[in-house]
Image (cartoon, rainbow, N blue to C red; front, side, top):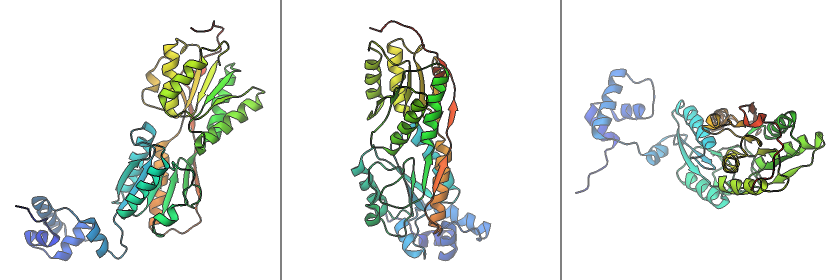
Length: 341
C-alpha cells in the first residue's frame, strides 16, 4: 500500500488554520502570529510534510526556488571545502540552499552539471571553470540565471569573477626564497592551460627574471602523485634545485612526500601556493602563500545574491589578497650536499 505525500492542505487541516497561513509560514514570512506559526510547524513535523520546490516555484511570482548551484574542482579538496562552507553560510543567512558538485577538471562534466542544475531551476550558479570556454552558458542557462565565476576567469561569457592575486602571490614566494639565498628555484605548476597556473607562472617568471636567475618550470601536474614522481626525479639529478615553488596544495603535498622519502626535506626549501590541513604540523612546517577561500566564497555568494535580486551593473572582478605564512620550509638556506641516491 502506497502512502500519499502530505500536502499544505493537510497541514492546514491539522493545524486548524487557513492554507494561506501555511503558505506564509513555509515561505519564511515573518508576519504570521507566533502562536499560529508554532501550530503550523508542529503540524508539519507530525505529518512529515516536505515542501515541493517545483510546485512552489510555479506559484511564486518571481519563479525562484531558493537554491543556488556551486560547481568547484573537488568538494573534498580543502580549498574547495572552505569555499563551499563560506558560500553556504552566506546563502543560509538569506534562506537560500546550496547544491554543490565536483568538476574534476573535466569540461564535459562542467557542462553536464550546469545543465543538471538548470533543470533543477537553480536561481544562480557559482562556477570554478574547468573548461577553456564558457560560451555554452548562453545556450544552456535561462537569460535570468546569473553566474559568478570563482578562482578562474571565464572565457566567452560575461559575469562577476572572484580571483586571488595569483601573480602577486607567486612573486612574493620567489622573492622570499631568493632572500634566503636560493638561486636555483624550480616551479612545479598545475594544469598548463588553467588561468591560475598561468598567473602563478607569470609571477614566478617575473621574480626570477628581476633577480637575473634562470627559470626552471614543470607544468601540467595533476595531483599529488604526479608531483611526487617529478620531485623525486628532480632531486636525483647531478645538480638539483635548492628550492621549490609549488603551484597548488596537492602539488605541495606530493613534493613534501618526495622530499621526505629522499631525506631532503631539511635542506631543500619549499614554498607552496595554497595552505592545506596539518601543513603547520610537519617537520619542517610548510611555508605557504595562503589564499583566503572563505573570503572568496563570501564574496562570490554576495555577488550572486545581488544579481539574483536584480543588480544590473557591468560585470566586475573582485580581487582577494594572498598572505605569506612563513613556517620553516621556505626559510631553509641552500646546502652543499652530495647527489642523492
